[in-house]
Length: 163
Image 1 (cartoon, rainbow, N blue to C red):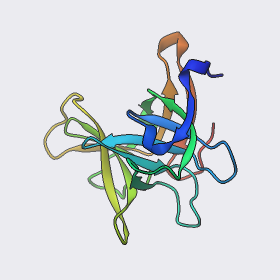
Image 2 (cartoon, one colour; image 1 turned 45 degrees about the vertical axis):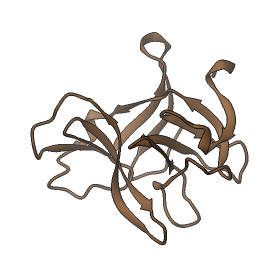
Image 3 (cartoon, rainbow, N blue to C red; image 1 turned 30 degrees about the horizontal axis):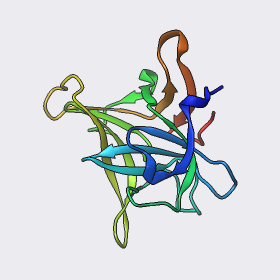
Image 4 (tube, helix red, strand yellow; image 1 turned 90 degrees about the vertical axis):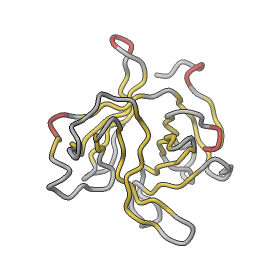
């Protein structure tokens, strides 16, 4: 359950922090809005027209994509899905922890293409050793902390998302 103060309907361009956007209709998509280099990016968590999941695009002026915004969500990493990102293939949708940052592997849409990339959206974390990283294929989106924490979405980079 959501408190009415925890959500609002709007276009993806309205997001100013890490935000989960839920679809209100069959024509909208579940997205995670992240801020990279002070610019918002929408990451589609649903299958998108046979293009796959985890497609990302800059959304600061996008009023076409809409949904129910749940701002201020947090990401939690499933330590049982941990592997060495330097030695293994890192699937799209995986979270990669390196340096003092957290990134998601996405298909980043450019002007005329989409290319696999790491989209950094959290920084200032405890520093990792130089040139070392850790990959997590399972993670979850949560709202609140401690006794008030609610899991809003679980992601396994190899399977479809579940609520």
